[in-house]
Image (cartoon, each protein chain N blue to C red):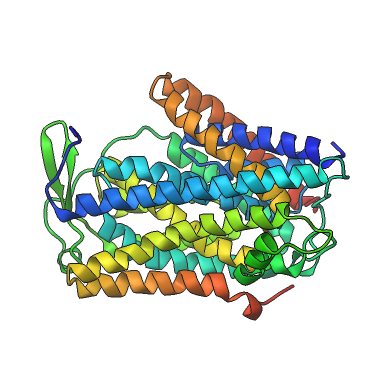
Amino acid sequence: MNEPQHNSEDTRVEQTMGRLLQAGVLLAALVTAVGGAFYLAERATQERPAYDKLPPNGVGLDHPAELNSPAGVLELAFRGRPGYGLGRGLIQLGVLLLIATPVARVAFSVYVFARQRDRLYVAVTLAVLVLLLISLFAGPWLPGG
Amino acid sequence: MNNVLVFTGLVWLGSFMAGLLGALTGLGGGVVIVPMLVLAFGADIKYAIGASLVSVIATSSGSAAAYVREGYSNIRIGMLLEIATTVGALAGAFLALVVWPNVIAVIFGAVLIISAYLSSRPRRDSRMADQPDPLAVRLKLDGSYPTAKGMESYHVRRVPAGFGLMFVAGVLSGLLGIGSGALKVLALDQAMRLPFKVSTTTSNFMIGVTAAASAGVYLARGYIDPGLAMPVLLGVLPGSLLGARILTHAPVRTLRIVFALVITALAIQMIYNGAMGKI
């Protein structure tokens, strides 16, 4: 109520963005926590993964290639796979939601600048959005291994 | 340390401390997470960077919400410079795919020392620009922010220099899994002459987007593993929230010096282990 206001539309937009970010982080943390509970229930007494060597694409016994793409993660988290459990897929879904949070913020900014008919900044925010999407979906074309 | 439960608990505890330390120093959790996972838990540095990026997005996005409410951050500057940081982050993440791990460790240590030095300097507003800069005006970057005397407006300078520094900040973020907050503030505060409060909040606003750009590449490459990401994320979040709360009550100066020493020790160990080929 008594928050300092500067009367530009920018401030209201910033506040909405702030709430969007907070909600995204909260949701991501919740999903990760639920996944973590499953994970511990499924694997608590197993030997810990060493993490000391990185196999090609990180793919190993407990890290199927599905964990490395948005589509694969959705499949693991909701459908699971025999003998693998739901925990690790759900955690990765939480991580994806977290990565998606700043992306959603940028997408929201595109809309806001479009409503203000600010063409320059529609272009700027669209450029950032495209870069983020490239990063999320460029997996199959990456170098190295 | 041999079963999943104990390992997860220890990583959680370490990440909680890292979040606390990161918030108190103003350096972010990433700078502690990576050395912790590498030095104490023996993880491959790329797994450590992957987990760290996740924590960086969480702390940045979580605290940005609080800052934007106060009306300090400049969205247009943030968005414009995010082009530079995301391109840089993608370049850095690609670089990480092909550079040797021990080289990454040495660079990490060096950047850590520089960041600790930059953020331990006393904070003061740099001289404000009194003349509008034509490019900044064309890009609609000038703004205003709340002060004790009411709203005060400011001019933005040297946009290309700021843009260039932001590219470097992005590369370091993608290569090392850190937020590069210290370098971002340097670009906004020293090069572009924004008021300090606007610099720090705008930088924080940008860190999440930068880290998200690199995190996509790391996820696709399999460097983000749920078994590490889960305790790191769930540890860093409450740790950094507690740290932010302590900051408003504690004698900050002493804390900063103590933690700057801790961070320098971590940095030296990263450089030593990297140079000796132990990473």
